[in-house]
Image 1 (tube, helix red, strand yellow):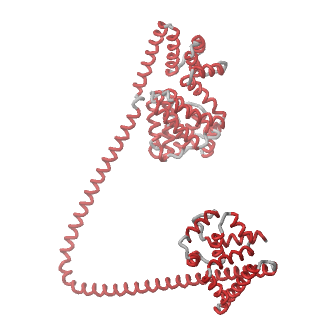
Image 2 (image 1 turned 180 degrees about the vertical axis):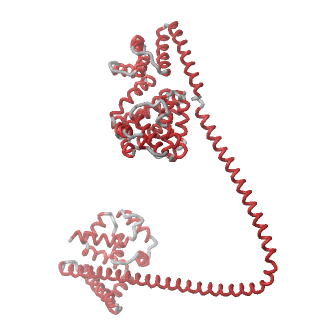
Image 3 (image 1 turned 180 degrees about the horizontal axis):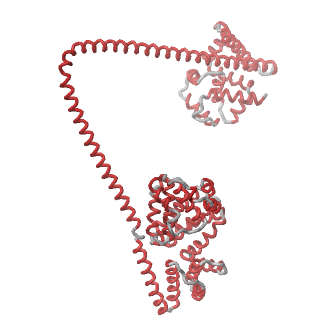
Amino acid sequence: MDAAENLMNTKPDSALAILKGIHRSDIKGEESSARFALLKSMALDKNYIDLKTFNVLQPAIDYYLEHGSPDEKFRTYYYQGRIYMNQCKEDSAMLCFMNGCDLRPKVTDSLLLAHTLVAQGSLYFKQYKVDEFIHNNLEAAKLYQAIGKNVFAIKSYTNALDGYILKTDKVAADSLLSICESLVQKYPEGEAYLFSSYLSYTINLCSPKEIKELLSEFQDEKLTSDETMIMAQGYSKIGEYDKALALLSRLSSSKSPLDSLKYTTVKIDILEKQGKYKDAFTLYKEYAVMLEHYQHKLLTQDLLFSDQKHQLEIKNIKEIQKKNWMIGISLCSIIVLVMLVGWAYYRGHLSKTKRILTEKENENLKLEQDNLKKEKEKAELERNKKILEAENLEKDKKRIEAEQRQQELEAANLRLEISQLEGERDHLKQLQKEKSEMAKPIHDIIEDRLNMLNGLLAKEITNNDSYAKSYNEWIETMRNDKKKFMDSTRLAFTALHPMFMKYLEKHGLTVDEINYLCLYAIGLRGKEVGEYIQLKRHYIISHEIRKKLGIDEHETNIGLYVRRLMKDFEQSNQ
């Protein structure tokens, strides 16, 4: 049975052969019998062998509808409904499908759920419930697409398209037709389902010119009975009544009441347009008899009222469940009340019996309780003290670890700063050697900056402030003559980092904006730059520079960005 189930969707003929090889005597127990019955019903249905009795499926109905999982119940309802349809008991079939759809939130078999929606939709169509027919087929099409059954999806979409054509809703029909055409391009095997709907769409919703072109294109095609009636209807619309009657004459009498009604409707329309009112009236009387018979059959089967009947059954079930729940709550309340009364009586009797002994032992007990309370409070204090000590130890440990991490970070930052200062110093020395012909102001600026860097490096390495004399003098110069210092720094950077300075000029930065950026490049922070230049437009200048350089407003730090950019140009130059 496992092997048959695995082959059921891909090779149903092999699954059926395996199941036929299993003897009834080898199946033990109700659950195994139910599984075998359901699998065999599935295999027969997938091999297009219609069951008209419940001989095969009955064990599954008896067991799964009461004890089965949601999927097992759902499958049983579906195949039970299929058998009812084969028996022409369409009202019973509809109830089976609706019972199955009630399990929809818990069902995992999407393929069978889609099949059920399609089957239920076909019954809605017979009841003239076009909206429900469209809804079911659209839902089924989405499920088919989700599991990769695209040909089935095309068929369901074309069913829904036929529904919109019946409602003469051209907007919705156009939308569905475009979906079907795009799917058929990907999956040409689904074209057979679209052809009939396309014929009906053109003849019912398009212009006479488009109808005539379509009839001319497909007049020699081999057509089904339904397609032949649609073509005849088309010829009638464009006034070619002889061709319409010739097409209808090819059709033999149909066993389907709906096809017979459709055939008669088309022929009456043709006869009326030809002016053959007597023949049309005679045929109309036959049509009225057929329609009355069909509607009587619907009423007799209760198919028209199956939805309401199902809803009433569900409502009754819910009311019974609600009533049972209320009864259960009432019984529980009574039981609890009796237990409380009994417990109260028992406690009163017990209290009365022990009252004398309790009074005699009361003082001793109270003393013991006081002692216990004190011991408990002492133990609680000890416990709280230990907890507090543990918390303090944990805090001290975390603080020490944080200090260690901070020290490590500061050491790493110091190493990085020293490395950067050394790099800049070496670069200045190299530039001093290679560019002896540079202008004296630039040469002096480089000399001053080199002295400052040597002093600052010595201070950082030895932790001795006396080495930072050149750096302190440089800072003092910065404070005394801001314009001169900023211009000299820009000239120094022009000599040291020409590509970096050209990049700034290329992006349209003014001399003042470049001077502003050079303050960041020599290592000053935003707050220090603001304090140094003492301009209220400090943040406006920063915003304008960011805009010209294309720096995001949320860039971490403009100083970091400038120094990183300068370093990138140095590496590319190397």
